[in-house]
Image 1 (cartoon, rainbow, N blue to C red):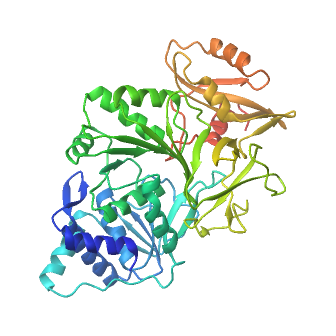
Image 2 (cartoon, rainbow, N blue to C red; image 1 turned 180 degrees about the horizontal axis):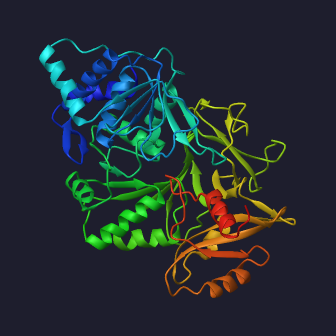
Image 3 (tube, rainbow, N blue to C red; image 1 turned 90 degrees about the horizontal axis):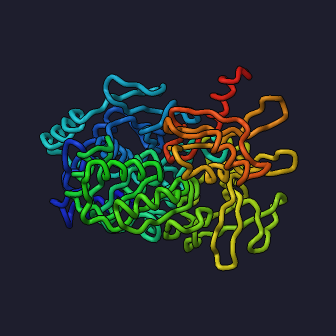
Length: 482
């Protein structure tokens, strides 16, 4: 049996009354969750959902978890749309969505809410019939989960995770991401971090806390559940820490914060130290490859140092010809391991998956001791007349300037073929942008931004990474370049 389903069954047998799922409007024990999953699986089978179909869900978080487990019990390929904009790059066979909403098109659309789930359970209990047997995935390389990502280019696409990849990640999560301690993960089920955290709760017998709104009610639920670990992207964690500060709510059992998806800034680390006073772990990885490296973070550390490679990960730094370079020499990052995804649902013209390796689009160097230091995105590095500039390095130079709330660098061509760096800033009213310009010219001679502008918000994806292409488009519009 697929490992997560076996874990759920075992917990329902050994700890039937223990809390398994905590949502905004209810708590399910392991016995209740197991019964709901079986009943929903039977109802979906009756409605024509079949093994190997790609089934997308757009549901309330707690409902999404119940339905996702039911779909895994039917051996479908599952896809959650929580937090995702337009559905592109995949064509689901069925869409399970909240009544009154519809995201994209599919040959079959089924409206599901809590009443629908409760009715399925009530009907199954009344019928007294044995539950539909769990359908086994035919092979370990069968696809069980598709997770949408921007890949290495910013283009949305689906990452295909096999049964073996998911089971391997689940078996090794305790080394870097999720262990047996109660956890609040701010990432949704549509992300690899959120999905695998939810699966791990079945393994460890801890409750999965869903996140509908980041508010005081969520913090109260987390405190009551004895949450010891807070996980999320730096943007998500930063927002929650600010809320904790404002509301003066405490998480008395909290022991650690974990971040992934983007580097944690020194300002965020200082804020966590001040408000929460717990250690912070940073994780480097990808939807495609899972966890790759990790280290404990502190305010004075190098944000580019992402830590020691995890056991089982093979990582190499290669030159433009694909030849491995010596330790300490910069090049393109590639890695592989048992948790590597099968590939994308659509074409891979960039060759991100090559000869068993995944190329994440990062540049960096690897020490002889296995410490990975990143130097930016290969696709982001811009050549200005022979001078290579990484926009992320400019972002880091802006951090901490008085009055700057958030900032991000982008590339723009006011004259065709002549790229320039632009800087978008979210700033307080008294922020002196001229002084910022002068500072950057001093710190980054020849690599400083020449186009400045204020924005209301820096566009970021679900993991907190800057969407630089959107900034380029916005400033092209402002400068009437289109």
